Image (cartoon, rainbow, N blue to C red):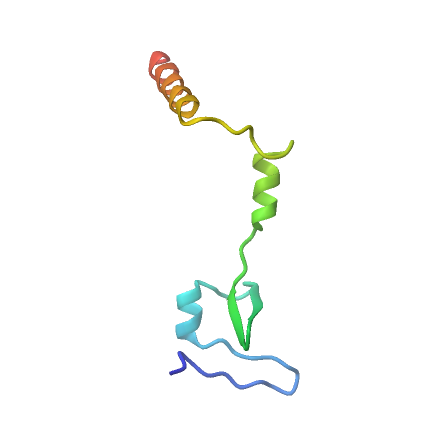
Length: 87
């Protein structure tokens, strides 16, 4: 069963029903993304940044070095010790 229904205007516009706006957390000026999934069209609120945008900011010189679990735990321990030593 459909969540809601909209009518297409002659100018190709639709109104997004209030229930759908609330579920998506959108308002005037919000951007919606339209995606295709087989025979279905998916409409969702557009994020401000894409995954690629975030990845480029976090890892500007490429993917991070692969580390072992031991190296990760050691790094976390060092971070905690340094943070608590500053107090």
